[in-house]
Length: 271
Image (cartoon, rainbow, N blue to C red; front, side, top):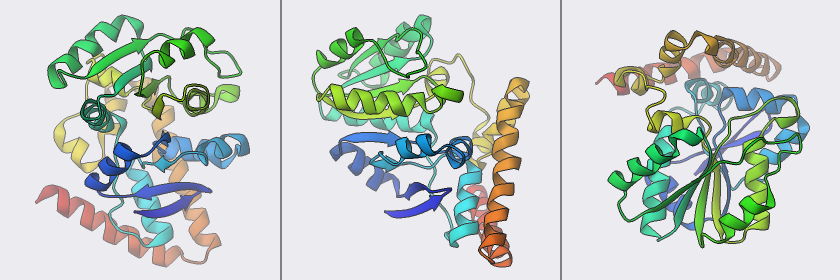
């Protein structure tokens, strides 16, 4: 496993089998930094401190891959979207006889979510909890903590989104609280809107776009309201990366590394 810092947030690069092994054996908070999260942490010391308490930081987003190439000359950063991580987590929980708890998501989709896992992971104990409204302190009701304690050894997937303002990083903050107050929880991981894809509330882009890392274009096409978020990820985020390469006096080296990574990425995905 290799580590890289983007805006003082650590990212871990590892192959799928190593990721599986680490998720299988570790206890703690797992985060999935994407460009939007990294931008938010760049200007928020409190949020950055929360992210630093994670045991694994699994990169997400094609722009994150090219940022690492630009700043570290590292080619082929492994990225794992949340929707691809959830099946892996479910398999791990099933193999270890742990429960998998989804905290959040659309309450009316919970039955659909459970049914999906009954098909793919028939011996897995799956449950869903609706946390209700989350206050500015990003804490959940003690009754919910007690319900989680009753589940025995478990993994908690938090589907509450990134949050804004005082709620910035609510998934990670709640994950740390759960790990602190419920010792039976082995992993807490923020999965954002990935459960909406699993329940088919939101459709995924065509397979080719997913392989190339351009699923964001499909999302904007289907949901124009996402434009502002995508703009930050594919325009604003790279601008700050370019500024960092200029500050480090490695702009031309960065251009070369990104070009190599682009070629490797598209060649590997299309052959």
